[in-house]
Image (cartoon, rainbow, N blue to C red):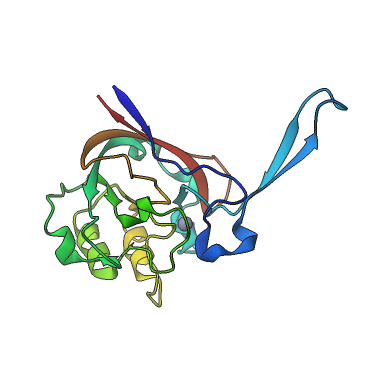
Length: 206
Ligand SMILES: [Zn+2]
């Protein structure tokens, strides 16, 4: 059995969306050795920084918040698809080159996994790809960009997927993971009323 940790390391200088300073995590030590006899810290970070899961509430005001996502859809078999041949975006035509089972959970591996700095031209899933995947009633879709879309006026990709309750994972690190089937364990923090949550995500190859 091999365990792949496909989560980003959280730290102040990590890559964040559009390099925005306010999205950089801040770890503050409230207590430290030697004066306090122990270390204790607090963290301030944007929910969409690092590897995280978007709740439908992120884009749909009546949508479910993160604590309502069913864990049965997050501890599941998943399929990593090697989409590294795509540049800029992943379209329906690109996805048609792969065999994708209805109602499965897929993770899209792109060139994003090989970059450690924010790239404003990161590879995303465009609305044609989102509509195709939504027609397959997938459980969820993960991608290795900090967003599943960019450069689409009305956040079409998010809306198309969230309206069908398809879970969205963003910020995966899939460099070491080959195309194929894995068991995934993805656990977002249980934050009441939130539009998403950071998650530690592992893939297991038996
Ligand atoms: Zn997000």
